[in-house]
Length: 126
Image (cartoon, rainbow, N blue to C red):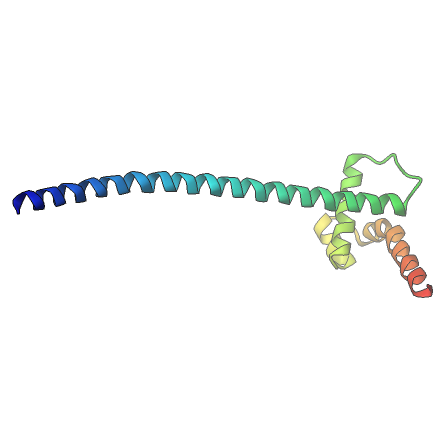
């Protein structure tokens, strides 16, 4: 009987020690999966931003077909103004966000607002 209790106690200690090692391996695997998930989410976010920028650049090119000599800072500002306008910001709100005057925002948006009106009119006429 004593031997049985000693063997059971030894087996319990062995299983307890093994369970600690197993949980450490599982937590390492879970951390690796979490890191992989985070990196995928960051890549998806970057891809969405690139797609949005490409769509805005295409709309800019369609609104002003003859103009290609813009600097990257001007292109970025126009892209930001158009993005805010598409999200439903008012001219005043866009001016506040971009630190421009209302007149400058209206001047930047004019070709694209008129382009959208023409598109809607053509769609309604058809």
